[in-house]
Length: 130
Image 1: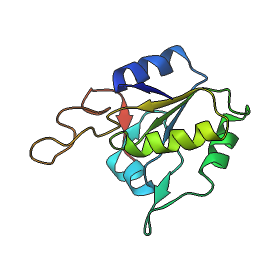
Image 2: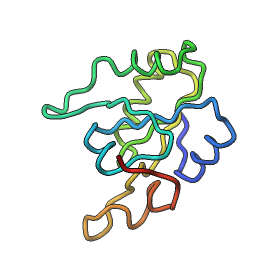
Image 3: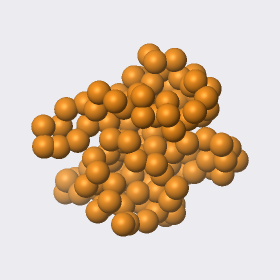
Image 4: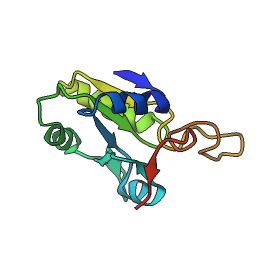
């Protein structure tokens, strides 16, 4: 798995329009916190029990439609869930998996807030909120 900071991930997506950007956060995060423009949503885990989605790999395979050769970039809140999801995709045979480090909201600052030191939104990359 390759790891890209948000700006590099955005540049990669612009130069590789066939690549998929998948938001692996919960449905609530995806809709109410916001998400990168063009991101597809496939939750890695979701509430209320926060169990790993047993259909995650199959859902991504369906979206990729090519047996695992299509580049897939994964983003979550801070880069942790997306890394775990990427490992699952690699184990299932995906060969071009990218984790967006720092995720959508970035790392916690000294006051335990996000969006202040890193992340997709912090970097001013295009995003939307439903």
